[in-house]
Length: 149
Image (tube, rainbow, N blue to C red):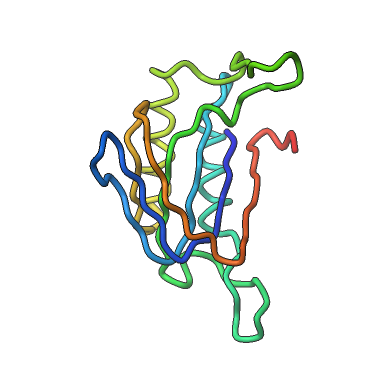
């Protein structure tokens, strides 16, 4: 699994002209599911993301995790995180999971995050979506469950 994680003051996602998810302070997560991802990748990513210490303490140091501030997650599926742009001009998606499997793992990831007691909102899987992200900092992190970067 791959994720782009952004610390946000607020974020929202709409699909097919309808608001599907909206959060206040927290993390916006663009999540890509890879061809070989398993439940182990899900638990690694969920645990990593909900415990990232990216919120500032009283001294201004990024030292506090999402759960401690009562923050929320907005999770949006994004298969394009597996786009391979090394050859030619059109990205290849050979390493992205097929939609049927990706949706199952995406939903498991969302459920796993909720099991930590985190409020999670989502987009609509396989829909064209519009995101509005108010990146706070800005703080943006890349996470890969296979630790390829």
